[in-house]
Length: 177
Image 1: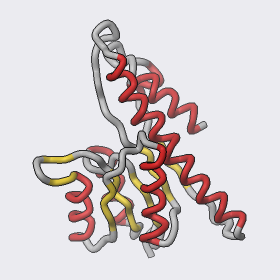
Image 2: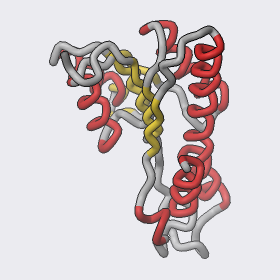
Image 3: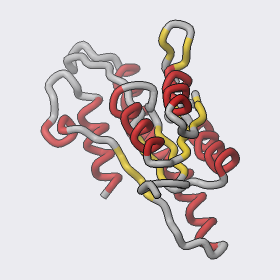
């Protein structure tokens, strides 16, 4: 039996990079995965490409294109896992964007967009997952769930060109604690 066999995971920002690596790892361990990513590469959604890779290796996964920064969109991600795979065991909050600029060149929109995806997106998905787990606990299922939040050393040490990204990652570290 594989370590995470028959578990269900939602992984946000799973279309490339670290999120993709998370999705492939969890699927390789027998986890059914919701691959969330809003990004596109030419005419293909990145989530679909990762799902195709998982399925070609014998895994089980579905795509999700919701924007984690929206409260209701984040709920639909969690709801999809419960509806399609019968539950949720693991949430990996990895979605993120960059809008690097020196603070004197950064627009309010660039600041807000990064905070919205990183911090609010992490909070949104976590909040909806916790509601699901709390309700499940009240019904007598005490298995609980696991949350993995992606942060960065920029959140601990700062970065001169990331006055939006660094505080978002620092806040995620604090939210995790």
